[in-house]
Length: 419
Ligand code: KG4
Ligand code: ZN
Image (cartoon, rainbow, N blue to C red):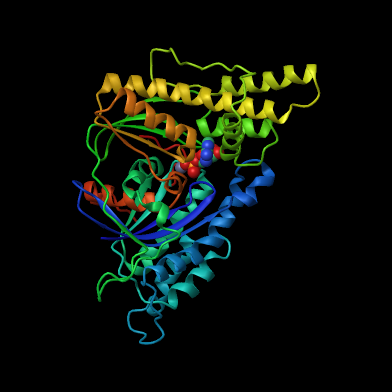
């Protein structure tokens, strides 16, 4: 199956085309084309994602990213040559409908019509689009764009849970090479693949720890499509806590990688520990988390320090960031370890943007090696951990095999979608 993936739930606009094979037993993906635009620099001055700005930017970025993904996948064929089955030959009632679908996205209909009229219908079997959770104004742009493409090309559109996308991102290992390597044409009639990778199937039952800017949850997975949340944060998500701590320390947005860099310096310099932070809920008898108290502890530490001296030294900042990262990691390791003991998984998946964090990756690798040698750990590559369209296309394949009836012409954005 050739699948077009679209992701616009937060501040990353992403479009990709993948070829999926292997069925549910051993799903495997080849990336044909991949376009991603991070809006991080635009939101940085606001210290967080500004929903209406994200919405506007998604609308601007989707058409060029679609073009890039199709061109890389050699699915971009100019229609003017033969003029046969180009989308431009649609009657005006189809364009009227599409105008209605795209009416809320300023200027998008005009760009869409011009772009789509100029090319032939690509041989794509399915469009997979994130429908939640996320920022609703941002989600709607991707959904409208997907519906418009589905209508103009007559391709079914499947709504996808962004968190399932994070889970299936582990099927895309090898993704680090997507940006840098271009493989040769494999055979005369095959398109040139950006990357072709057969991944090892996930063994069930599995447990997933999902940690991102908006979510922190432990999910029990009996099989593909059978997800049960067994624990979650009661307040801030891990990524959110990283971002807020960064803001307290006047580090740029997004704060996760910045805090992590400072923490790394403390380890590199082997600095003695100055500050001590709590490990919230580490002994609680459930699988829930809480990070807002930890964030407040950082605030109090800074306030108390300010009473004594004016400015923190560099080493003190490094140490505080290391202690914060250690605290978060200790809690994640402890809860996940206990969930593994009690739920007996064969595979541990850790995924979501925060999994780009080196210390967290290394700590989970050590946990599995030392305490759970029979369990396989699956971690997405760093660039597959943060939001992208490939993870949505991979979840699209799984969901389509399980529930082809879920394709829809009227998809609704669900900001709070949950397992
Ligand atoms: O999954 P994601 O890309 O978007 C959401 O679905 O939320 O996750 C983004 C989050 C942000 O909070 C960002 O600060 C955090 O992931 N993050 C990190 C690192 N890289 C990204 N947190 C800690 N260490 C990192 N290296
Ligand atoms: Zn995400």
